[in-house]
Image 1 (cartoon, one colour):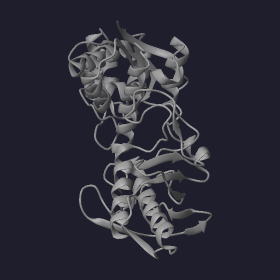
Image 2: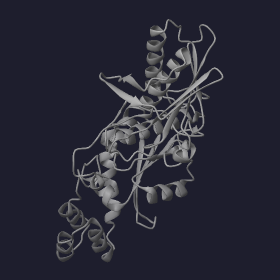
Image 3: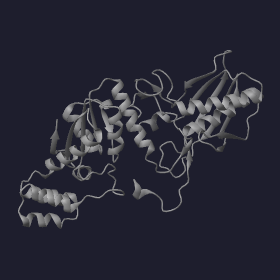
Length: 362
């Protein structure tokens, strides 16, 4: 991920929640006055504000629709450039703000997340932003703020296939997200958030065996090995620490950690963030493990002169020494210590073809 970051100051962007809030405020004002504002100011949850321009404005048959183009700044967000639409209609007195999923916005189908099953996938943060915007407009025009709000993202169903929404039980489209209203470029927060929500959904479904994988090859291999459902799979990536620490507070009975040799070797060294920008494989330590397995000095010396974890593994394989098993065992020790009990842990190491080459655990 980090190698793709532009070598210049990065421009922040705005969440789908911020865009939806701006569209709702503009549509509600038009519904009350017959006129759309040229631009809309949105108060951000942690202070400050942003001004969003409208890309669409329609007032037809008692409904107002406004659109805002999602600008994710320099973040490689799949929703960058998408149009977030909000259609507002007056509701019955005393009903407050009622939310609905339009085209491209998903619906919750599994328990475990903060939004109940059957509700549109509009997270609590954006809901609160929208409610506050409705109240602000209602007070300015002496209204009660009883409205029906439909949020849509045309093309969102296709974009959602590039996300983990289906695994989380969000069907039919994207989620309206954002706790701060701001997209920080190349932030790890959204990935870790997805891992945590995956754990929540799996626990709510009563699953007792989860598998967290560092990549697609190891995920496919562990899924096939155990016949796991998609809800049991966690796209851990490089975020071993974010996964294990959340499981420490939200335990499951059994956890399988799956990955390639180099990533698991980093975990065995105690690294909890496995990206190359923050952790490197300790070649000397791997050579030392090979020596501990009884490899002769000349083989250990070859390993010490290797330039990658794969080369050390090749040296071990030449002598039929189970280095991958030992690395898996050391990685499991780190995982168990991080979890601090309550979960049975297994570590599996796969090669690039998905073949199991190292294993240890309960």
